[in-house]
Amino acid sequence: MRSYEFAEDYRKNDAIRRADVGIGPYKRPPISTAHTQMIRKYPMRNIALTLKYLGTAYHGWQVQKTVTTVGQTLEEAAAAVVGHPVHMTGCGRTDAGVHARVYVANFRTSARIPCDRIPYALNTHLPEDIVVTNAMEVHEDFNAIGSCVKKEYTYLIYNSGIRDPFYVNRAWFYPKHLDETVMQRAADCFIGTHDFAAVRSVGTDVKSTVRTVYDYKVERDGDLISLRVSANGFLYNMVRIIVGTLLEVNMGKISMSELPSIIESCDRSRAGATAKAHGLYLEKVHYL
Image (tube, rainbow, N blue to C red):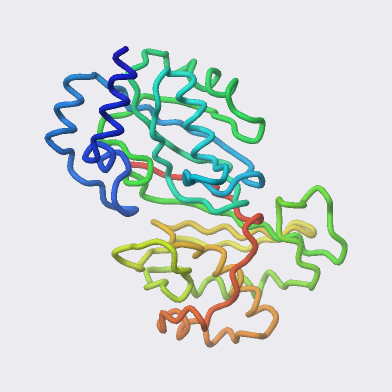
């Protein structure tokens, strides 16, 4: 009964929910007095999960009322395992169709299931396109998004005159020839600390649009072009808009010399179109 009683208190107590979710990608609100009292009353474990998924069948991570999402599916599986409703905090809001080779989420539970058994238990309740690979108990202050200090994404383009059915919904099919060396030179312009408002879609409120891109690599392997980027955080659609901008540089629609001024302008209309969602993969997430 304790688990269900806690779940009811949890649902009603907004202070606790705010502490679990966090505010913005870099700030976690302090634990409230109400939250502290609840922790004392019900000893809870903070469990971090590592998972991977194909995003084709889902409308992103974020739980929504009318569509199926990865977060909702994982919450339902976890509730079936631990015996009470749970709230999953994900390391980011991936869009519909976006995939993750590594994704981290955390939740709180009073269940005493050993961590090494949690992935097996969850996977029996999950569809084949979502797999939990690891679970570990973490400290109380750990928050999958608020504690994340670096993310890495890969974007795949299948660059051939004839499509490959094995890359459908796994890479963006782009039949016109792309020069990866030109795209690499353009990608180098985005490395460093900048205000990236020009490559951001409006959709989420953030305190700052300044981010630091650490590395950007464009490589070709046959017909497959991979674009790998790492940063301390990404704005909404930032990776996909940069990819779209690199393609427009390659096609001559945007000149290489324009890129610094486009970034400085913070004007979304000057950057390229947003690349297709299904070519994007969350590759790695880093924590201190």
